[in-house]
Image 1 (tube, rainbow, N blue to C red):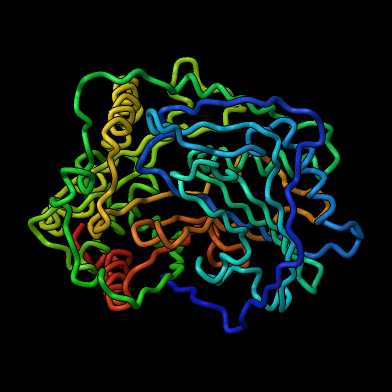
Image 2: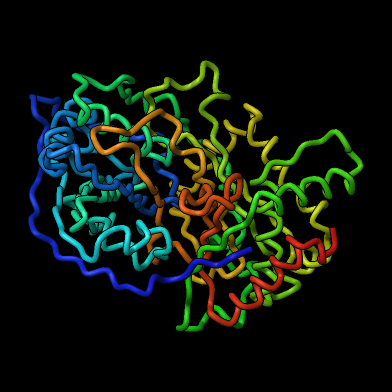
Amino acid sequence: MTDQTNPSLPLLLKKQSFELVKPSKHTPCGTLSLSSLDNNPLNEVRHAVIYVFEANQKNQNDPVSLLRKALSELLVYYYPFSGRLVRRKSDRKFQLVCNREGVPFAVATAAPDLPSLNFIENFVDEVALPLVPEIEFNYENEIGYHPLAMQVTKFPCGGFTIGLSLLHALCDGLGVARFVHSLAELAGGKSEPSVLPVWQRERLVREIDNEPAKLPCGVGSRASLLATSPYMSSNDWVTEIISIKDGNIKMLKDTLVRECEMPKETFTTYEILSSCIWKSRSRALNLDLDKISVLCIVVGIGHVLDPPLSEGYYGNSVVDVYIELTARELHELSISDIVKIVKGAKKKAYDKRYIEEEIINIERMIKEDAKSDPVVDGLLVMTDVRNIKLFGSMDFGWNDPVNMRFLTFQESARNMVMILGPSKFDPGMEGGVRVVITLPRDAMVKFKQEMDAMLQLRSRF
């Protein structure tokens, strides 16, 4: 297990221009309703993603003008992105006002060059965030907010980055990936996206019933049940990128197969790392043993629905599955026991009856205006973005990106762990993963010790 921390060279960035890019052709006006999943009150956060491109000496085109034009053309198909997201006062649900206002588009220059910065590879989230445009959002604002903003940052070497900010209410990670790949297709000369986007949010809308909402621990009336930590009030927080090699993951899998009573059972990297990280984080934070620690796993359901969602669907198509254990249970259970629990929870999420109940429950939470408690020490949200790049090449003249980073904003980073694919710049990391985690500095030291013991099989399995 190796760590990647801040680069020694600072990122010097200067914003050059800002404009609203409008659709290149006439697009519909009006108001669009969103799905129940889009309206999940516990997902009112932002996506941020950076794509890093090397210089191409054979390509003399200006990436800024090329991407600006491609964005304008793409907004003909993704026209809701050029409107504003607003919340209805009557039922607190989101709507998109399609008014062709345009997408905020920023241009910046930065120094030093990308090779000197290791192509942003070692940048923790808060250092890389200036490469992503800001979206000011307060969902209570009556005029609404732009759901998407884009920034192109040019470097002296000829390389550049594309940074996107999107509101989660409009799309999930796969929706972001579909949009960006379509952008690359148009920038590369295609006349239209290979997969045309569809709205179809009505497919994931359910009628509310009279039952009370089933709240996860840490939300509403169940807030007091969530475990707290003596470290979380610290002002000294650090974000680190921890690399875990393929050999360590394989060793964990082999050990779990031997330890479990189901020798033919297979365990995914996500299931194993979720279990190890959940336990290590709980122990590192010294959570209250008799209160509840929660692991939230995110499960895609688009392929489970009948019929499956269209390939061009870009709305939220995931459900959150909450696993609750007391911190004492989490500490005392073996990793093999925790992995079985995580695997069982994932399987449950693919049951059509469970999905229906979860969507209806979101409607209940919207009606009850359910909110997370500000103290969420015992909550861990695990998100895996290794498979976001599913849609083929993004080469529109500068080859495929040499790096891609999903980032977390400060408001959600403290409870989120992100699993990234291996670094392209370290051959020894092939098949491995990178884990991005934010903790108080003192707890980070303990967390890495706990994780190292598990990866070296010195912990109880």
